[in-house]
Image (spheres, helix red, strand yellow):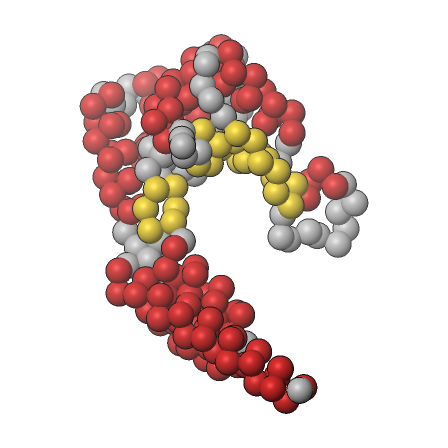
Length: 218
């Protein structure tokens, strides 16, 4: 079965629909998921702003989908005025926009590339590709500073076992999607092993506690 991972996220359903139409017209398989945002400002009465639309595609289609998006944005880039905020960026900041595809839209990346060219900054496709690979390798690095999270997991084993199960699962199985569609584990092997232990102990604790409650009620 083909795996689908998040390609783009939108708060605006119209933008999500535009991408769906683009993917469909180019024969790229997709899935749409609608999520409720966990943070909802008390002053926000618009339900649409409380939702996030996830457009998912196969990791193998990421390159093609980005190419299609870039082609679609080409006309928009040509019509941008010089008062756009990216024109105030330094060359180094614009390079970050071009390279960090996980943080910027396709439109921003193309516009940043155009501004650099207009400033006579020499930047080849190979240089961009190599810089993107360096960025992806950096993103692959596992999360650090997990000690307190692991300690909390062991505490929850005895106090709130169901929370311990959740923490153990997160440590053991959580993955992140890289800009190229690749999925990698968020935590290093040693932390994932701790997650497995917390997960197992929490399940045992939950069963024991449930048995004790049943025994006492009998």
